[in-house]
Image 1 (cartoon, rainbow, N blue to C red):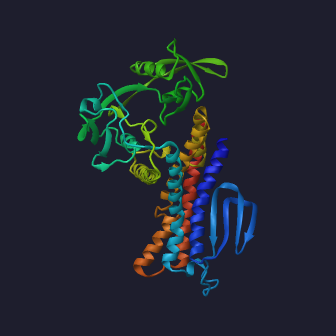
Image 2: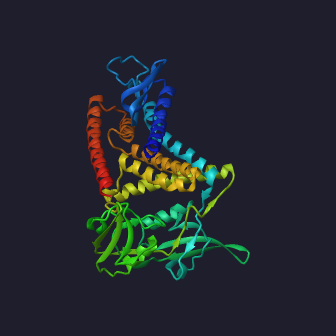
Image 3: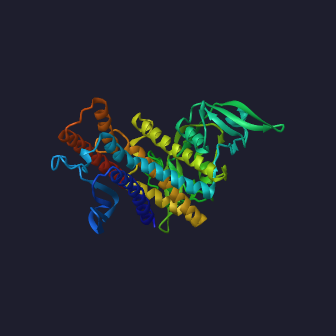
Length: 431
């Protein structure tokens, strides 16, 4: 099922992307010789008019093949390269734009079913930083550090990206029958504790996965191990395990696990870590509200804005070293995430499987749209950059030069894909 869902999601995203190129090519009277879903050998296909439509063996790709060669027939006014720069730009830009349209439409489906997540405070830790600052549950957040807030995830994303930074909130609440606005400054509390670099499945004692730097994994613990005891004391939940690790104060722990029907004792030394807590949360599942169709359209746009913003922010953090390259996932890693999401969602029923698969499709579609707009040769963004230079200079880059630049860019992208794929496979077997 993991692979089935992955193929469906990837295929829909790629199909929509290529459909953008296809429709704008047709609108600009450009000849499209082939429209394909997939890569490699052709499994099935048919020809209608001048275009061959086909499905190929490998589902991770697609193409809209246009007649581009000017030199073959300079008089051919239906060749891509013989069209105006604005026509060419619109065709190339349509792919990423259609990915954004797809993300918007899928977000609309989710919001019509589940409602939208308004930026409301759903939890305030007793005696925590937020409580001390005067923040209360049910407060509606209007602004965060001066920026307008639309979704609860805008808040949780800011907490993830800037965990040690103060948060200046403009909130709205009901007091004495009146709606009032208040400014609240929440300064996070520094917390130091011990961990062994692993994640326990919720309401379970089974190891789910590991952090990048993990004393637990280095000691020999594996995903799927069921933790029975820590230092000889039995444990019954994930919270029991966390408490015992944090209470170790760095002393060596003997972790008893059940693996393949046999009990094993593994020695692990916890490491001290520092974290920060703002002492509040805005849970998107607990703050959902249903509205009319116009409100759903409005919040679908906010949803698209959120995913574009987080993708751009994540790229910036990757380039500045705030996020490790180890956190980048390729096709194998994405299939693994889809599988994990499916396995967790099916416990709650088919509706939650459907909604969470749509959420992943929104994330991936918006991500593909942003990535394709990057000004990198061989990507749509690289070609758009050439068109913009042509508009500014009123001179066209020679085809051979553009082709050489795109070939170099494509080679570098393929090298990057090989590295990411290798890292995906490494993580899959190491965890």
